[in-house]
Image (cartoon, rainbow, N blue to C red; front, side, top):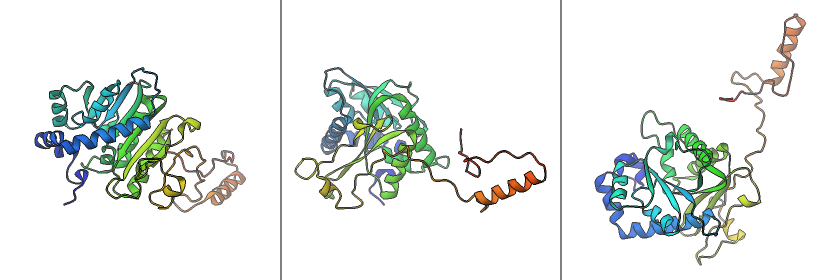
Length: 291
């Protein structure tokens, strides 16, 4: 059986009472969570003005990552699907407000009130269909759409993720891009199998100078150079700031009938005296699933 938790059971089942307490009592897990959440907070690039921000911790679990936010002087709201994890967080008397919910169904938070969001090892769970009613694409769409709405414009969201493969990484990036985010992937220690960590760094709003993606850290703890980060094609930084590029025209319809065939049929209908809509650049273009 795979050692990846998301491939063993749904999160609300995998993190039961026993696993939740085991997870929270592990000194190794506590140290790793502190490091990952500290790096995520660093990538949020919040203003250093001493003003506490309202942050969102998605997949907060028992509040280990939230403790890093509290130590930095920020207020936070934690969301998790595991009731057992949240029970442990309440027992530990964490300082954040806790919500029980499924991020794949949307966040349900008022628009524009969150100053930043982090998530540690949680977003990749959305790529799994744990129930017959689960469609990963729809869940990713609901998640990133609701996240974009609740963030203040210009705010960042940083997700530490463990994508199973390149296709899963691109799936997550694609739906973040469709929701309106700019940003990309930051990879720390790209040439280390053990220390390698991926962070999805997103900015709420259109691309600008301020949405430039930070560089990942190298083995010496310093930022990787462009040469180092481009040696491995799979480890490359994936930017999604070109989200406003025009889509390619749909040349062939589902029935195999392209634009030329449709224009020809419309001309035939006009010669017969029928009322036909005028030809435009949208003629024969595939309609979107929503308006």
